[in-house]
Length: 280
Image (cartoon, rainbow, N blue to C red; front, side, top):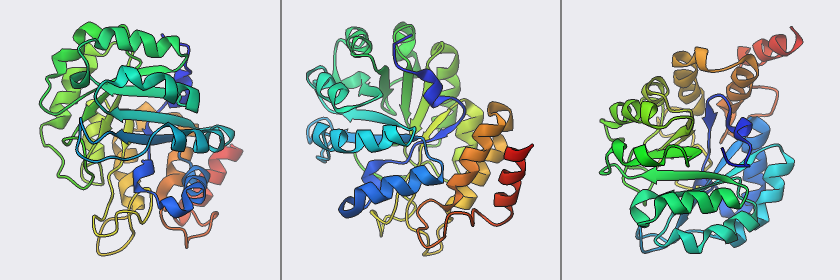
């Protein structure tokens, strides 16, 4: 086990992505989702080579890491880049709590997992949809986190790959003690099946491709299901996987990306139930 703190990822965690935030108000957006209960903040790094888009790097990570840590959260870096071994030290220095690279991006996955752990962060390996689950079997003693892409990497808003739950089920016995994270097409219709399959960290997709930067969990409107329904489907299938503190924390996420709703008005009757649970 690496020197990073696995307890920070306990229970089922929703990991909103920085890429779905409004970058003109990034600090406020992070505060909103963390005040609502998010603990894991997903940080997507793309290099224009491993995947076509170019996104963000260590400079942005270093500017938000203190805010996330001060709020009790963790920075979950997902590197969709070629030659990831050239970048890990910079992200560790910037404040990453976990660094995940792609199995397909380096011939030395085992060595790279060890190098990440030596930087005192959790080490993760991601596999693309076309990479079999069995590819990680020789890495399970080195990985703290295994990320299964449930769409092809590079863009949000893609359709969820229907074979993904079965793939995650195959990953579970191969993963050893590693956490299993899923990324792509995760929403109201897919979260339940992924939790049931064994995923415990979920990176939600944007809920409206027409308004890609409306909020961490997407824009509320246009007939799209809101975060209330998204969390409801996940909570319904996974009660045995969480303690009371996790239930309360995740229930609070129901108003993420709805800044007009004031804290304290958390999904109607849920607020009273959460308060009662804290007092009991």
